[in-house]
Length: 359
Image (tube, rainbow, N blue to C red; front, side, top):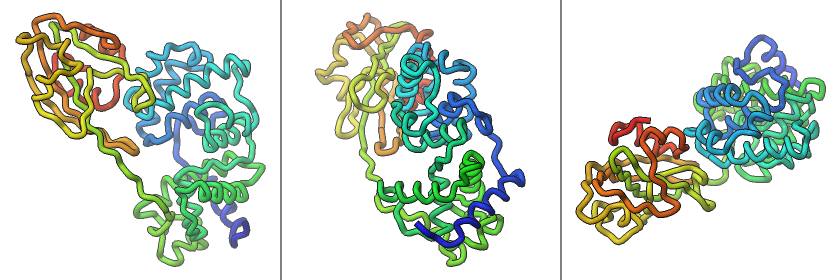
């Protein structure tokens, strides 16, 4: 594809970056593919400020690929708690073990081989290839899409497969083969600090004189998106049943959200239900022997996921008779709860002071 001012784009961008116009991050400038990979996985769907915290924790707990591969799943999930998108964590552990088992503990130095690893898509493969091995592969994230779409005033939607391929091809044409890592970092930094989604700082942008969107006064109209996200609403009801200093939790299985994490016994309904749920013949009945329990409080929490809105109602109950705990439920002491990884919505509840234990 041919556009005007392509060479100028790269030249101006690199000149701007060399003037110290770059963000300082603990993972920037490193060549270790393990730490680059770790940072990129953590930063997917995560704000940089939050991601930095988790990156530093993981590096401290698992300084090498071998350390991560040898870790227990429960420990890794617990460290990941609060980041969400737990498939990332699951794939992280799987790939670490696969690299140790089948690749001699080394990351492939080839883009296609990197792409074959579980949990590593085009973006992460390009990041490892360029930042660790100086290979000319463009790292195309939301910041890059925004910069390119505005500079060239492109009407190609960024949220389609065709659009992603289109912008990746363009970025690969712009990348200088001799400085791929610097180019990738520069364009991401520009998008994050100058060419922001709202109220971009166009007067400070090194590309403004040639930016078509700026010349047209249409910066806010780019990038173009085709689809609107549909959000599924779900209603979870949790029984927080305390017997002395013990409570009941269970591990989430199947292919639903939060697989591998723990939660209180849960019933999902089409809408939020009231206290009548405590009287119904449900899986909760064995945990609350007749006449032995008291309802101490009800708390509601919400959590917004990418395509789901979870509304949860927590029924805090105390009983003086030992509950009949059935698999997969387990009875745990309050001092052991910190050993388990919970979804963010439950962590917020546990820290709210509505029950005997604060995590």
